[in-house]
Length: 140
Image (cartoon, rainbow, N blue to C red; front, side):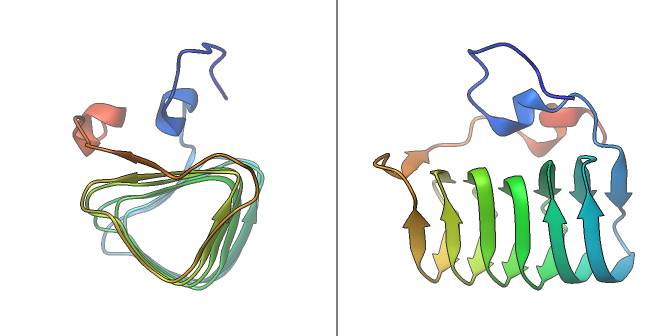
């Protein structure tokens, strides 16, 4: 469920519940489709097409192409990332592949080894992360 506060600048602030999880120590191979918000703390080998938020936590590793509404990356992605709304890359986030979205935010320390394609006149936002991953959702 997305929040309605227009002051919510970070994509994580808009998600109230991440219902689908791939836990640390688990590996999923295949294709993910759906509208639930997904959290990946383990490893995914495959592709996705999600009409929701995909969050790859610091321990998460994704090998394959991603299409989602919003993609938040604190772990590693090896493949292309195509977000319909926004991509956020945290200080520990790493992408080896091309990224494409109307809005892209990269925290100090986040790395991309590939091309950045923004489909709007906005600029890439760079920021210094002041939150911990735990404070974003209270899961850990």
